[in-house]
Length: 314
Image (cartoon, rainbow, N blue to C red; front, side):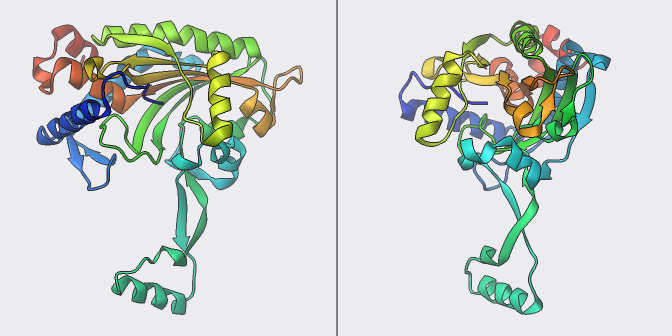
C-alpha cells in the first residue's frame, strides 16, 4: 500500500511523522531496533492488532474462503513468476546465505574482524521475502480452477524495503487479504464490493476513511506509465485515513485491487472453460489500522470510546 501525495510542506509533514513515532516509542507501543521502519511490537500493540483482525475476519467471507497461512519467505521461482522484481526492484528483499568452504569462511571472518563488509561471501538462496501476503498462494492454483473459482483468506507478514521515519511505513508488516480468482466479472465484483465493506469496517472502529483511486509505486520510466494506466483503468482503490490532519491526503490502510489476468497468465491459471483467470484482492494493513486507531483515539487504550473497545476486545 502507498501513502498519497502531501498537501503540507515536506518539513511539516516529516516533523509530524517523527513526533508520532517518538510518542509511540515513549509509550512503549513500538520497540526501537535501530533500523528505520523496523520495529518490535509491545503486548498492547499486539492486542490492538489482534482486535482489528477479529473485526476484519467477522466482515470477511468466513468458511466460504480457503484459509491459507504462509511463512514470511517463499520460493524464488514463485517470486520470479509474480514479476515483482520488474516493477518494484526498490522494494524487494532477497535471502542470501553462506555456502562456501572453510577457507572462504576464514576470509569472511578476517574481513569482519577488520570491520569490512562480509556479505560478498554470501550467495542467493532459493527464497525471497514475501512482498504481498497473497503472492505465495497463486502457484497452488496453476491449471484449471474448479467451477466457481477460488476465494482465499490469506494472512501474513510482508517485507518492503522502505526505510522511513513515518511509523506507518514499516519495512515488515502484516496484511490480511481476501483474494478472488475466477472470471473477469468475479474479480471485479470482489474488488468493488470490498470498497464499501472496507469503509464499513473502518467506520465501525471510529475511523474516518475515504476511498480514493490510487496506483502502486512502480519503478522507473516504464513504471510511471504503468501507474497512469492503473489509475486510468481504475484497478486500485485505497481506503485512507488522515493521520496527520491537513498535512497530507491520507495514509492507505486498506487496498482493493484488480490484477486482471496478470497472475492467471504468469502462473498458468485458467477458468473451467479454458479462459485465463482474473484475480482481485482486498488487503487490510494490520499495523496501519492499529496506528490509525492510536492516532485517532489516543495512546491510552483504556480511554478509547466504549463502542470501539467493545468491537476490538469483546
